[in-house]
Length: 480
Image (cartoon, rainbow, N blue to C red; front, side):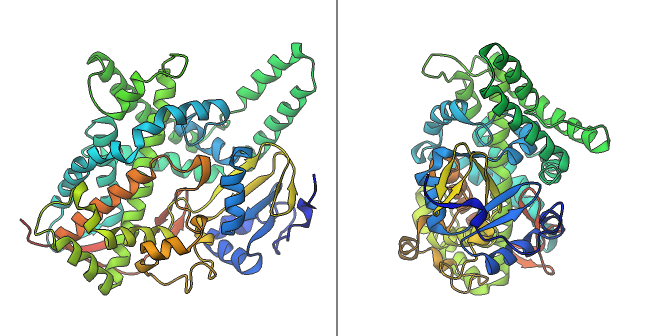
């Protein structure tokens, strides 16, 4: 295979033996991403416990995620860290299982199908805002989480989660914090390395041994939970989530699968061979959709409201759009009238992409940008860094929703903006998230005037949440 060796990819300075860049990343991920942008640009090489490649240009990302998307699967680090929470759900599954599940679930997320959820999105948002006291300070990141969790429960599972949001949110936060800590743990790195060595060993053994090796490989799929308080907390959090999901599954079966929600559709669905999903697979997909259906949208909404409060002219333009509805609650037919509102959300996702860093692994030897990547190479992608490239985003730190007019979007490479990834593994719920955010943002601005309280900084954990929350003063507006 022609091309330059992976070792010829520029190495980011500052690697310290034996952990390479791991300590710097652990101390400050945002600063590290800025340094990579300044020093390496399009592509670079890092050292952790192994060599890692970082791809950071629209053209290379198109080559990797779109043209050669079948060669790159989910990173084993991300897969391992999230396995206790989402198992073999659509976000973490691979190979034939992923292809089958994606094909099975894709029709459920077509724009024509999700349009019927607009009313529930509006109702949940209205009810969330109705709990605010006029002139009081609200913790906006918590409030947007409660709203989007309620929307996820209503639209995806026909379940009432608003009153349970704090308990479920605490369990999810525990699981996500554990996942975040685990991504940089030496224990997971050793486990992944052992698993991959066993896989390769099995390829060279007689068939009589391959089944034994395969069982050992499967046993190393979930991360090993070491004794201690953190593992106990994780098990307790997963127990809360498992109980809630199983209760919903049992309720659907008892009712004869008559509801029209997504959970019922999952339970009724059959693959090409006529087989149904197991309860465990349904559980994994439900938790994947539940996490993806509220966590990232909640974070993006919180950042949108913060940015609007700091930019009065943008706030004025959004308010003009929603006030033109004459007090009517926004619905799906109003979305074409709320174009600037959607642009605000997209710009918030540019500046603060909730999934600010993700990884892929090469399943076979492949060339990327003229470099030969051996099988098993880990490639990192940072939407946060990508979205701050001056070549595609002039004055990248400036908040400017007009970057997302139709004309501006058409003039940019599609892979310059990557909050939902791209290629075969594009987020299945991207249309759902954009519609939800457009409606929720419009209703909040329609019903409240918001003022930020103090500075807010991003905290790069499992997602890019605001550090210490996002306090805002809410003054309620009169509406019809």
